[in-house]
Length: 291
Ligand code: SAM
Image 1: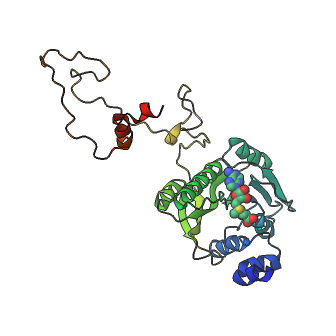
Image 2: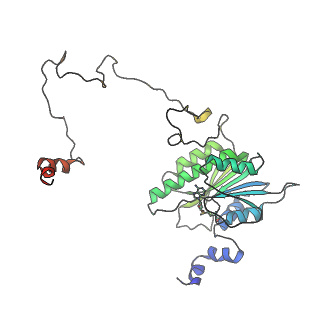
Image 3: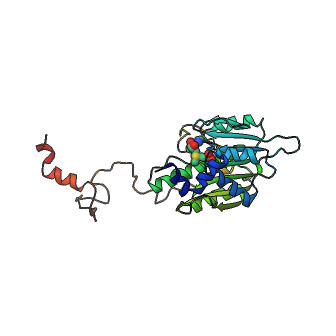
């Protein structure tokens, strides 16, 4: 493909180069702002998954000095990013608590007014898997956001409008008073990409931010660190006649009530079990003959 053919095919790619943006995605954030005014009154902003840095460029251009407070922008990415004036960079993983702590450290303990995340994993081409990994990345972004966003703050993140997206909206609504989905003009119609715009951060009263993934990070022998409304206890009920047979015990073949034991076939054998072929080979002595 010649140099000019991508310029022709993708007007935003061409405009990004003409206007000095590092990526065409700059227009997506600018168009989200045209609709929602997400930069109004913002002095502390975090750009998660920021490389190569076009959203950080937008932030540094749009955030204005408020009274005597200069804007502060912190950008995070796994990848190294070329320096940008006015942007503090952290090369790190947004799923890690240490990254949240580093961000807060740069704000001198204060929280952010705005968190944006354009995170995308490396695409595998398997749509279900890609959507799932993207959803996990958004949850990681939301998780880190709960550590760093002030009450009333705004969170904007890229999503894929896949099958399970309504579950994600429900999860976001727990934390924000208003959740919109925006499709900027610069985002291709052929793509299921869109952006959630979550306004007015309002976590449940007893919510305690926690980066632990209970399935992965917390050994069973440790005291469970999940507390407040994060912790859900469901009733554990033993059922069936407790005087009945004990499923962990071995019984003799003949005992009271069943005096003469007779072995029977299962009522219904599996129709086409995955081990059928192996059984046939075993019956034909295949394994012994091939040794
Ligand atoms: N918004 C950027 C811009 O305008 O230049 C483009 C972001 S790019 C589409 C997605 C980025 O997500 C990649 O740079 C990738 O390294 C980053 N990323 C993916 N997983 C991440 C993670 N766990 N922690 C930090 N960054 C991550």
